[in-house]
Image 1 (tube, rainbow, N blue to C red):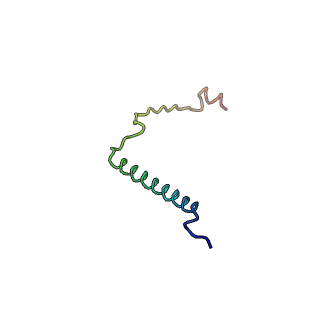
Image 2 (cartoon, rainbow, N blue to C red; image 1 turned 45 degrees about the horizontal axis):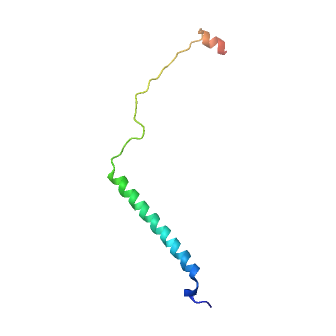
Image 3 (cartoon, helix red, strand yellow; image 1 turned 45 degrees about the vertical axis):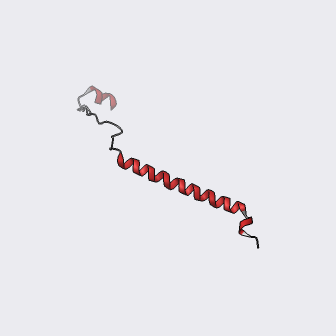
Length: 67
């Protein structure tokens, strides 16, 4: 059976995983704190929309060309 201290690559992998988890947790905390302090801003300003409605009856030329 090998001694744990001689398996340096296992310790290197564990240290890498721990550092990645620590960086991810720190980044998510920083992102959460910055989002909480910032005022909500609309990404797209709302503009009034115009709606055009065209009525077509059976006597219309547009209806007769479609049919």
